[in-house]
Length: 238
Image (cartoon, rainbow, N blue to C red; front, side, top):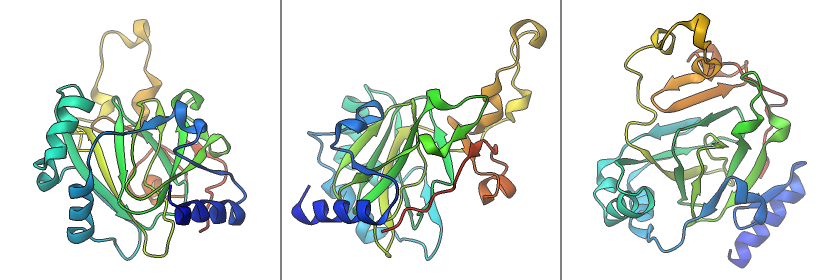
């Protein structure tokens, strides 16, 4: 981190009642790791020049063909994802709350196009389809940093560090976060009386996206997410 970013992190800890770690701290090790040896500069320049931050809320685009055609796209597919098909998109916005948590079957890469934060949790802390926000931890991601988050990491939209908001590149296995072809309740295998019913099925929200949210959020009230997040919907100050 630069001296300025260290001061930003120090300030964040001074104004919040939760600890804000850095992704460079050892506390991040169970959630993911910082990617080294990959050049995201072209993708970051594209993001700053051609993508907007909404006036309020967040915008998520699963796949941006222009970034996928950049050299970094082929590198991520061949090296980081071992030849598997991927998508490169982005999430821009002004989020400042925990609000919801999601996870995927496969790792996710986030690239900070500006300083931002991530609220993270562990999949194994979901009990009976419920997650307590007291277990979540917040991490500062310096501008230009790329992190890979393991598939056992609960996460959601980044959290802003300035009034302007954030821009973040999001890399995932191809077709993640796209509409399901059929409702999860219609997906059965065998006799339910024999094999049981998978409780995770209630959380399946989109392709390769399992989501829980605070009961009072639009994700639940309007969009049908499972109301599985309990505890304070914490606002992270900056």
